[in-house]
Every structure is written in C-alpha cells, then in structure tokens.
Length: 133
Image 1 (spheres, one colour):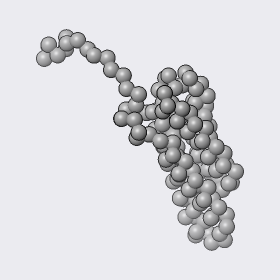
Image 2: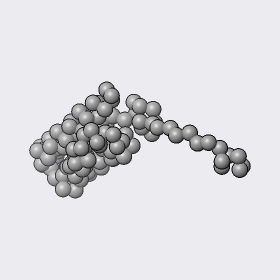
Image 3: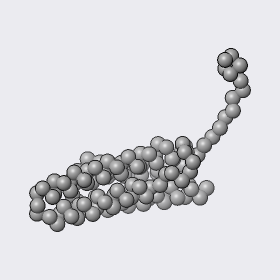
Image 4: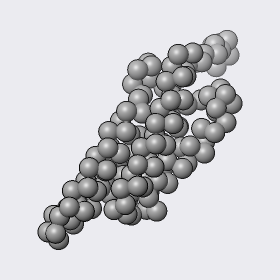
C-alpha cells in the first residue's frame, strides 16, 4: 500500500473525456430544427390541445439543446480552445439563453428559433476547426 502512495506519478493529458468522435454540435442543431418545426406547426393550428402539446414538446427540445451545448462546453472544449476562440464562452452562453426561458422555451417566435440555429452554427464552426487541429 505504501509503495503505491510513493510510486512515481505519470501525468497524462486527454483532449476529451471519451475518445474523440462522441461529441458533435449536430445533436443541438437537430433539436433546434425540431423546435423551429414545432413552432411552425403550433402557429398553424387553431386546436388548443394540439398547441399545448406542441408547446410542451418545444420546451423539452429546448432543454435538450441546452444539455447538448453544455456537454460540449464542459466536456469537449478545453482551455486551449477558449484561448484560441475567446468568443466561445459568450457564444455558448448566448445560445443556451436562446434555448432557455427567454428564448425558444418561452416563445413561439420563429425568429428566435432562427437566432438559436445561427448561434449553434457559429459554435459548430469552431468545433469543427478544433477537430482539424
């Protein structure tokens, strides 16, 4: 036991928690596309029950967008990424807010869904640049 405590340590470094290839901003984008489609269907319907179900689905998908973005932010992106792309923290923050209560989760405005998709695209562009490195 003592030999283990005093054994030399080996410093290792990994780019991500799991082998690369498991992270992808496409997951957030797919959910955001669903949000946009649900908004369109809800706005086209006069059925209050249908609209209620649509709003519920939109809110669930908004939470999933936030989840996927947070996973990228906390598990994939590392300090060297934030140094090279200093706008990354702000982009993720703005995107998660666009998926939150003041964004797609709380509105049926298709323009907000478009703004969310644009932010996800900006994050994806950075993500794919980091994959080239």
